[in-house]
Length: 150
Length: 331
Image (cartoon, rainbow over all chains, first blue to last red; front, side, top):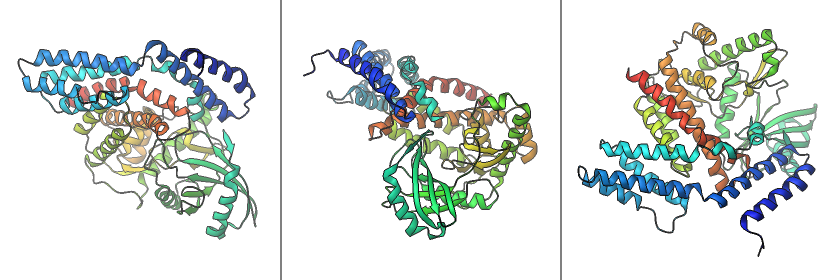
């Protein structure tokens, strides 16, 4: 068993790669792979400290869509029930990304062709949550990786 | 950037000696992989032939990647056909359709000797005369591509069919690669499907027409590379590409658009340009998201994580273009 916490381990791996591997690499392609790996480690460290953003996204969508369903229940009871069913479509053991994909897909099928006013509100929830979740994603981008592809 | 691939030398030599006797290959000296770009794997081949030293470029069809489905046979045949029609595609030399020969189907083409100008190349920024001649040839070659007859790619009738077909391709691809919900992208595709315009003309499109895919020597265009995204559709789609994904000093807008229009007779409807810009951005976003999917399927190029990140982070921009399109087309 590694005796360090997960975040301590990631930080140590990062320091090792930066101090002992990167300076020795003359192959540009290998260097950029290591630089990209360092950014991935940074994001994983952030995930450990702050939780998986996909989990937060799932929770926010669940709460917001259930609220929309509750508001719509009086005027569109069937649609409201379908919204709640879509939120429950993923098995309990699903990973955060599996859940996000399955629930997102079920909600999309429900709202994309619907004229219900609640459908537009659900779309806004999905869109706003996508924007919120990805707002800071550029922070994890490896500039050298992109530059090497151009 | 390029990397030596010594393990490929022997099987490539065997494949070329048995399949391509016209090359007169005596031995393959080295194989180096180019590491830029997201497309088919490309390699520089140094060889000795009975005519002396030779340098070729090989494109290998990958098992998976961000721009599937790969079809090296189609690319080879199209390049041969447009080359015969006078377009400056690299000369095709050999197509190996036996994937077991070196670990994938591949094509061999002539090495084009020249330089590539980047999208923000200081050599162009500092030399107005060079920039002007580059722009002239950029427009002329694009016009000629659009006018080139070909029999390799499936044709579309005029009307909204070609745009709708592209949207459908995007939808199918997104279904396969979506790892977390992409509601903005899905909605964008719905809008693009609903608003698919009548094409005024259908022609051959390069699909990736930008400065980094063109080679120049002494101020003259000598090579049009990377034909894997070529398709048939509305030429305005290629123009919109130069204004978005391919943005740079040769973006076909303003005066350059006017010159293209005078040269080809194609009327440039700004509403349609907005439509095709949105379509190009959506396609580019889907290609980027494919980076994450590729890694999940066994890919080993970690740069694709960043490509997927850009694609995710850039999706809100689609909403802006989409609103602009809806306002324009519904006005």
